[in-house]
Length: 137
Image (cartoon, rainbow, N blue to C red; front, side, top):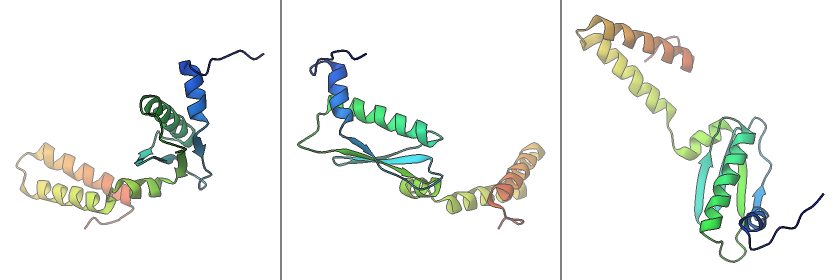
């Protein structure tokens, strides 16, 4: 059963705007999406691909309702792998791990509190398990 929806209603405007959102195919195992619209670009990572696409569409529709598109501009949602998502955000995991390891070693060497030193050693063990290193440098 179909029903009439006015093009001027919010539901009608959302429907028209949703037709301007294109979801492209992505790599196997994609979990996040890279969104481009007009001069905007952002990453949505909601834990899995279907949630990421839904959050991206919801965000885009809300944005498009309050900022009408210029001309025939369309939005593109491109699924990306976790590695690509990290690269797009500019996160340098190796630098972060190196900082955590250095801080743990400094804490173990210099901190007078035994509980804090023990917690730093536990964190160092977790980091080495996360990175797969037998020895943390």
